[in-house]
Length: 230
Picture 1 (tube, one colour):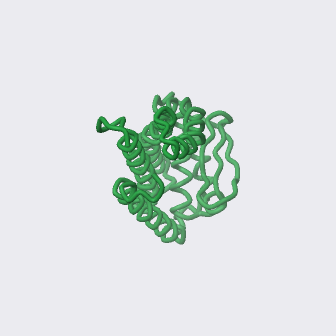
Picture 2 (cartoon, one colour):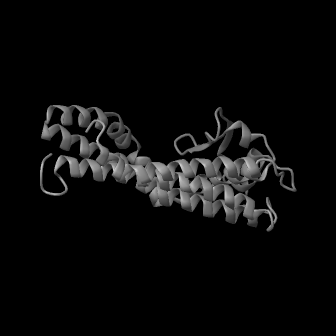
Picture 3 (cartoon, helix red, strand yellow):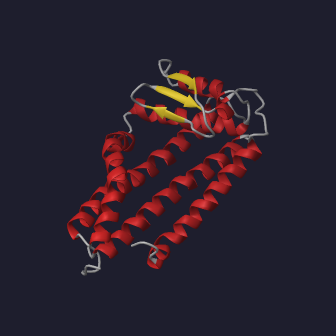
């Protein structure tokens, strides 16, 4: 397993896609982070408009630390926005804030993929934390049972990544619709927000592709796919 060139054959393209996705999201955020929206609304203000219009006045908005660390916490009903989003009146900030508000809209509507992802969080965390040590030890000791158990745990993390895709795409669709219907952005401003959200979406696609590629590698190397133990 260590320094296995076959690993690069499986995962290399996915890693390249991840690099491209990260470059695109940083480029898009840098570009549209310099363009102020006409109403002068910050990300936090834009999210507030969207939430209040949807009858979600009880969802709080808080400032968070870190670059693009924005997220919605369905347990606490809180939107946490990074400094470049919370207090900036840029198209990028409004787009990202609206996306997180989109998750709150999903939560209020009982959107099934969001509920499924939330239910998978503890399982995915356990899988992510335990799978790699089990796989490493299992391959080094040629302990097939450990390897297979590690693959099963890793599968839970992969499933989480796959379920995340429809959740994120749907949140962006809701965000763009809300930005237009509430008048937060004018029609000619929406393409800028869309560019930022499309770039962010590619990072989730890249993460899912990488996870699936790694799972396929482990399945092949363990003999669970292909009919032989290696």
